[in-house]
Length: 74
Image (cartoon, rainbow, N blue to C red; front, side, top):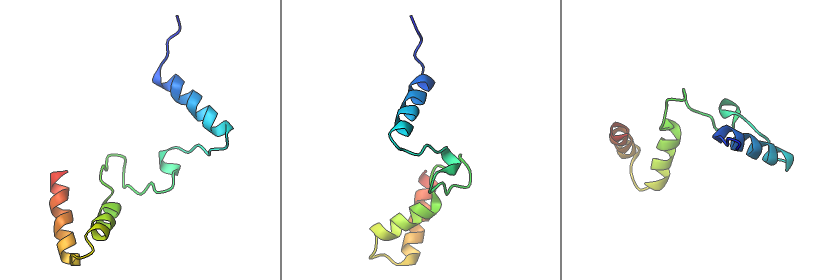
């Protein structure tokens, strides 16, 4: 009986995707890898942009207050 591991499935999937034309990239090489380090869960600039976009009626100061309070909750 053969053992199936996550890495076996991942390697097969990556091989298949590459064979059909997808470009395979590792984390830091991916577009949008804009975190300071891999421990950064919330991407600050994306979070800030999303808050401003979703709350267009709020002032920049109010959006900043929301950002500050949501950062403490995370």
